[in-house]
Amino acid sequence: MADEGEGGKVKEEPKLQPGMHPSFMNVLKTRERVKERLSGVKHKIGIYSAKGGVGKTTVSVNTAYALSAKGFKVGLLDADIDCPNLSIFLGIEGMMDVSSFPLKPIEKYGIKAASTAMIVDDTKKPIIWRGPIIVKMLYDFFENTEWGELDYLIIDLPPGTSDAPLTIMQVLDLDGFVIVTTPQRVAGINSIRSGLMAKRLNVSILGVVENMSSGEPSKSTGMVVSTLDTRLLGTVKMNPLFSMASDEGRIPASENDSILVMFNSIIESLVERNK
Ligand SMILES: Nc1ncnc2c1ncn2[C@@H]1O[C@H](COP(=O)(O)OP(=O)(O)OP(=O)(O)O)[C@@H](O)[C@H]1O
Ligand SMILES: [Mg+2]
Image 1: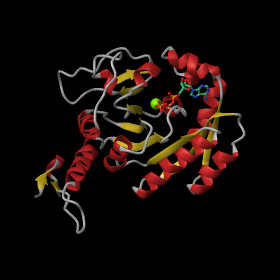
Image 2 (image 1 turned 180 degrees about the horizontal axis):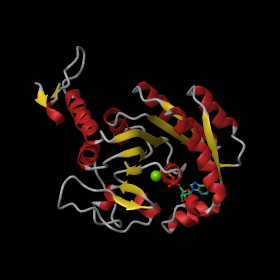
Image 3 (image 1 turned 90 degrees about the vertical axis):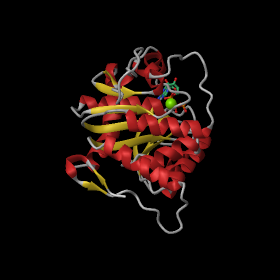
């Protein structure tokens, strides 16, 4: 059924295509609503790897900072629903005001940030939800957060290749993913899994970042880049300042020039692509 959209334009409801399972309509309708909610956002970039602990949140936060330092309007979305870490990395202790909708992200370092940790008032208890609840929570979160006008929305994904990453790939209409890996073979294998899943769901791969690097990309990272037929965006060297600053809620790139230089070179090709 057609509906009156913004500015009186007639919106077409998504239609069930031949061979499509009827329950997929729900995904398509959510996708349309989320698209409308994020209509002021020019570019949406996911930071992803199926492997835990490789530095997705680190790369998300420092990439967002580097973009913001170049004068772009930037948002950071923590899509890790069950283990949300973004507030810790940004040193945000405040909560989003849930008494009025849509929810407003909290600003720090000139970056707008939103995380379920800013809604669920307890960081000491585990959030134990089954897949369908996580998917519902992601839908609600995406539909009900107001980002306004942004040049870049950086989305910090959880690890794995199941419910949450799948929902993000289906619903968010991303420009693409930056795949994070480390020099180890086990990280490379899981990063390839992540990239192949994204490709299967028609989400572009924008490039690979080797984190915890010596500076010289490893054989395993070379394998990730060639298997996914993409490019290396840059390397991020191992540096104890990352964990020290992040544990205290400070952004490493905001206080260390050599770290900022590494992230500037990573964002260079992302920004270049959009010119
Ligand atoms: N280049 C680096 N040098 C040193 N420590 C790092 C580096 N990158 C990340 N770390 C540290 O490694 C730990 C894991 O990083 P992070 O939380 O960003 O990984 P993640 O992939 O987001 O993890 P998860 O899968 O749990 O979401 C953190 O303590 C972080 O500070
Ligand atoms: Mg993380």
